[in-house]
Image (tube, rainbow, N blue to C red; front, side, top):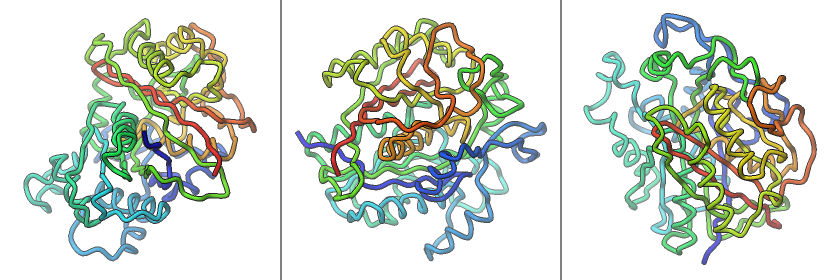
Length: 385
């Protein structure tokens, strides 16, 4: 069975337009979450993280592409171009598959002013995937994973399995979502958005912050020669607790099953894990559920953080974005502070990272949970460069 190595990465976000720029800002505990006053998104101010539109246009102009593209497509093309360049693969090769993760795609085209500039059907997820894949000359049918907030992790797991089975040599996994009126109003209807930057696992947390981003990770069966250590995606598992359309299991059952199964499948114990990148949305139910799941699986002493304090919840992009950051943390052996955490606010003990610290990270666990009871758990292993 082939291995799936991470050989290229990118993040386009409020904190930068490369993986290195993003990780540098995160390692300095800089947040992209601000109070947003934009009537086009919400009649009321809300806490969120938004990409600088001026910089986006400037960076995209440097690609010199013909045609008219949506805001999301510009983010995708920038992110994929940089990640592919970093990897050195041929994106047009029949041995390369494109996998996309998103919850809403070009949902801003619902706005009549924006939508009239593009042909009908551009809003459909498959259309976006096919358009972007075509720009890179790839003739393979792209795959779109849209399964709520585990979409990004699920897309990486799917791509990893195809490489391990020898069906493709490379996979370009791109996760993306936008801040739009549609998304903001939806979460406001749940009364889920915090008026201040989110505080995952903290006693005073009052809900999520929303964000927008596009992140890309390139996987390959061929390890890139690198003076730094390389990172392999060992594999992952998804589950569904079928608890509620928007609320997680109160006992953490679905996430527990995913973690237990991925440990069993890859002969790993909780004591082997050096770091956990949690979903950590800062809602009362999610954080409590994760704390229970970590306790039930013997992970409550393992260092854990949530990157949501830096980016807000980026929905379909979150799993890919947070995996890219986890890969960087593993290479640098740096545990990143979980921004916003001060006073413990869940019923079970969890070792939430309070300050940056140097620590060996050879094995990491990435988890995610989402609407409809979906859960995902994925293992990343550091190997010699």
